[in-house]
Figure 1 (cartoon, rainbow, N blue to C red):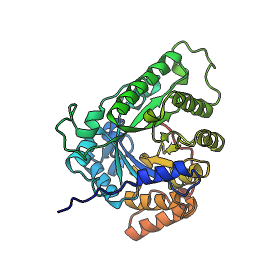
Figure 2 (tube, one colour):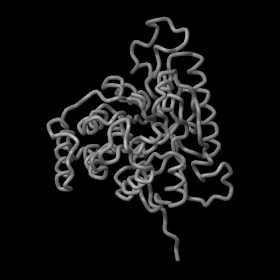
Figure 3 (cartoon, rainbow, N blue to C red):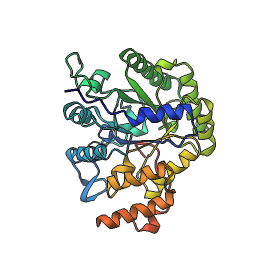
Figure 4 (cartoon, one colour):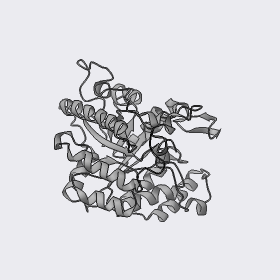
Length: 356
């Protein structure tokens, strides 16, 4: 019997078209189901009847059931996972085989995403580099992957930077990224780069009051351009994951180097229009990727939410039309929405960092 050919991943098809033609219609969606690397027990979201902050929360098994369902649905291009979830779903169950969805693993967990309840301190301190997992573990579930079954696991990872305008701290963060890039290039392991806004500008030791960047959007965009200027093609990220920097700076960054595909992160859950509107606005100003974690995980029905999110990302629905269509989906499913339609059509200022 002839073995089945692996299905081509939509991520690779879309990236090739976007780099060749930045004005094309393609848009890449990722579900960021790696929150267990940050929030602990609260990561899977509230269980029925749960209260914010105290629970009860869904289990990690329920969290993974949603990942299975969304992967089967096939409307996201990337599923971002913790190394432990990747081991269960990608390595042991091999759920991504025969699908167009690409699995990815969070490869580092800087201290600003250490968000265990009851501490409150880590996220307020300038971020420090740290990584729990390794490339071999992402691919095979083991430090030594010599005997692993080929074709399972992830060959794509997220590496995250948080810079705070401090030469010593930022050098250490960038040095960690350099070491990862070298290891990844040698291993043939692809990555995408997440860059957060500074998390503790007012708390850098020895910083004079008021001595901090006046324009954090330019601070972040300039650091991306400066950092990647020293990285040859073989070591570069395949795309960026950054906060939406506003129309002007996002357009400048997207136009600066067309080989650097700009993607935006979702941040806090917010209203449904916050999610759909952010995708539409970011795409309008040059972004071609969106990675949403809490926005998808907090939805009343994740499959219905992603169905409409995909339609908005592809330009088939406007963002406000998408909100109305999503409420129509909820009505058909007999699910009570978190908010009335008019409230869900509003836009709010949602957080753009894990800790906010």
